[in-house]
Structures are given as structure tokens and as C-alpha cells.
Image 1 (cartoon, rainbow, N blue to C red):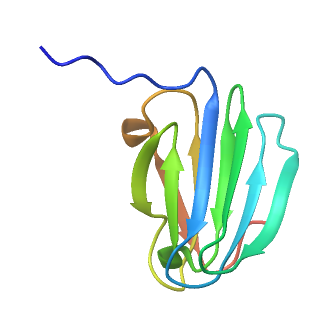
Image 2 (image 1 turned 180 degrees about the vertical axis):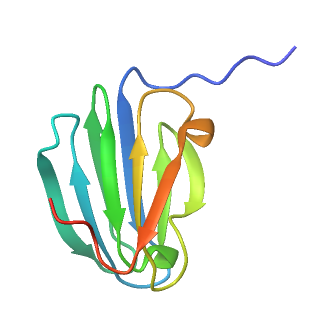
Length: 106
């Protein structure tokens, strides 16, 4: 019998630019912007929150997501802007995606 995967108590998201530059923006569970930056190829950023993290990723095909210790692969398609929200636990069934040409105003 296989053991169920263990996930951190909160939410831990790492975004790594693997195939080029990507801009990222992250918001915590209080809807406060905690990060906005451009990642050059090879750079990574990690952020945590006890309840929820929302990330926006530009040129999302160039960026890989690791959420709560699980590699989710590319954040989206090349040139695409995606917005994803994560909570504690397994990120696969909870992943919600909305893609748009421009990020939504905050």
C-alpha cells in the first residue's frame, strides 16, 4: 500500500524561469501583493502563505511551477498570461486557471 503524499501545512509556490524570461506577480491570502518581478532564465522565486497564494505569470510557457512540493510543469503556453490560485494540500485537483492577454487590475 502506498503512502499518501505529504504536503506542507501552508502554501509554498516556486516559480522557475527555465526557457526564457517571465514576469511574475504574487498575492497573499489577504490579497496583498507580495512580489512583482521579472525572472531571467535560470532564476527562481519561492513564496509562502498559510492559507492561499495567487500568482500571475507572463510568458508562462517559459516558467515552471512547483506547488506544495509537486512539480506542475509549465505555468501555461509561450507568450500567455495566466493567473492561478493555490491553497494548502495537493495542487492538482485544486488548480484553477484563467488566462488573459493582460493581467486583471488589482
